[in-house]
Image (cartoon, rainbow, N blue to C red; front, side, top):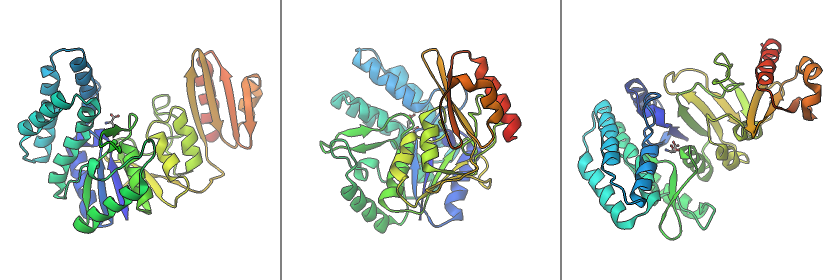
Length: 342
Ligand code: ASP
């Protein structure tokens, strides 16, 4: 069985939306559909989650929130138009507004981005909608696996296929618990783990995990197969395609994660699994204060070592870690790496 999760960008574009429908029709094993809130349509646009966070902050300061709710309505109207789905949006948004003004719970408000996106997408896909507050349960800090399993099982038996909002669950006091940013991915990982699904498809706007952050190098090659531990390392640095906690949840399971672009659904995904691959290559970095910490994993770093030996702070098998300040070193390293790993 397959759980598929759709990132914020996938609901901003009509072709991507049609591809989601194709995916549903194409394979009956896809039984759980998880959605993030609508993302940015372009660089000048705002994510629904950001609008909701700003709205909650303004409300706390006693400021007028109308402008935010108007923006939210406009974004959802667009999704309705693109999906041809008819729900009474104004009633839904008024309900949310009234509940929020009453309960003043910012997590509740922020979670409504995924709630409404999933509600509309469930109508579009013609599948039952089950809100995450009925499925994803937490104890104080950790997942209540038993209860989550029971509920997931119940709804899947009842409906066969379901649509669930990502990014949140409910705690033992019946309060909404939000995950960290980008946490729609975590919902997919929880479902795959609890139900022991063989595949977790993570549909995004990028064709898989790249050897180098595409923002640094737009010709960076896709990684075909990678282990959970390498993904954990990469996502602790600048790899943002998938949330770091996915590797944490799934590292001791047999679930494969397939990371793929919704704009090219027949392309090869990056496959993450519980196996080490010897010939894996990547460069990742993070900047802490004025220093760049760079990790290079490759079998061919002789030349790199020759030139940058004095910046190496750690080395083992085919992995080295360097620390330096001048930014140009980063592009020099990328150049050397490119020439070697081709
Ligand atoms: N909507 C949330 C965010 O913007 C979660 C997600 O996108 O997965 O962080």
